[in-house]
Image (cartoon, rainbow, N blue to C red):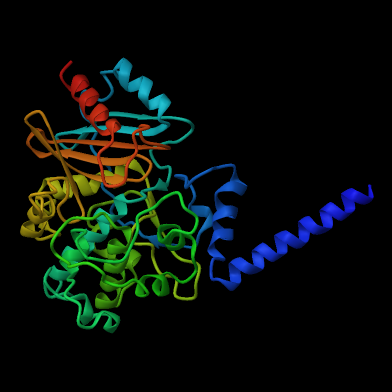
Length: 381
């Protein structure tokens, strides 16, 4: 008994010391990560984590526009392989939209058509859409405007807003989703996201090569907010969410600090149907119900590779060829996808808990091809 008391005493002392050291050396955010992830029974970020963070509301408009339902809605069942991988990889929503109507739709594990789940990096495509809108609205001059115009911390640097949007900033950032001391973890859980970002230096020549960095989009979001003088959630609502007829309010996660800065690199919580609207917007060259919400030239540039050596990425959007078909898409960390084939007028949406096991940063995983191929087998039955 005496030994146990002594052990517990020293255990408590060690824990208190470790916590103190984390705060002393500015790693207190790790404790937030532990609370949000491990204390909720997870071992990594998870799709319905928004209640554990502060959020701004992305408001829907007064005239929602529900997706039309195709005359052949759900007349074809999921293929055997699609059903298998949906179960193995924790799919919670799978949609096929054909000719702007919902052709197939299924939800799993208690989720439904209005369930909010985390976009993760699909938010990068949406943030880049806001860049196009800010240029269209005259808040930002062009893709070539230097970031130093907005943040004097980057005075003398040649990085432009277009470099941020195309992942070619030269920023000192290491994309790491597993290390608790990584800059990516700090950005997700820290209370002062602006300070974290503005401490990042330009260490490589910008505008020369693609390197997938979440910090690029975060800095881009900060610039858009500074240029417009509007919170990102409000600008998104007035620019796209309302005019595109989203049927539900969405949420944009914030850091927990006094500035309540939106996490532009991730973390918009919405549902499959409303996420799909961005696929339609880009498929239709920035036009929605006859109104040009986004400049068509910007849309075309976004879904065209900037660098020949990196054909998979344009400005905030990914591209992949399968056979003779050309797809562009939004992608999120755990297998959140809005995949578009404009020539076929097809949009595929998948949301879920995880990707296929061959996960890699900035690379296509097997699951993307599986979802596309199985969807097309269903469409051709």
